[in-house]
Length: 133
Image 1 (cartoon, rainbow, N blue to C red):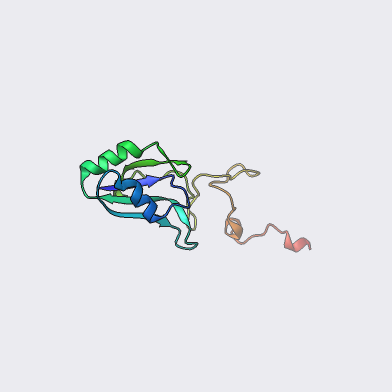
Image 2: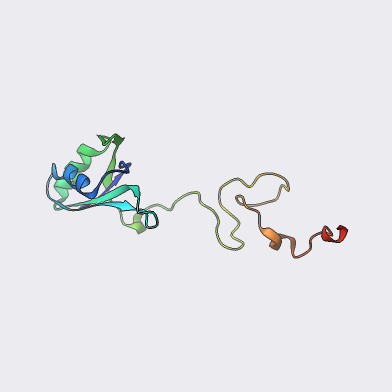
């Protein structure tokens, strides 16, 4: 069974994660996920255990327990397509309309979050601003 381990101390190594889970049975693999650009830990990882029984025991015992100063969140890993959609984020893309976020200020009918839309919102007409100067 594949186990998702969240809220992992950023200094935790693959070997330390493996050792933690080996108390409950055979660990097939243990991996801390690192940022692909910085190489630093993202604060979570995955542990694969040989049997579902051992994995379930590890989940039951370790979830909510402190390890290296952080309280772990441990549960069965789910495939990406099984996860619920993420909330928030931006609308993205050209004309995406935005999702959540700031938006504020003047205008009333502005949509989406932050950033404004540049000149495309004006249809090329600068409203005579440049003609005055």
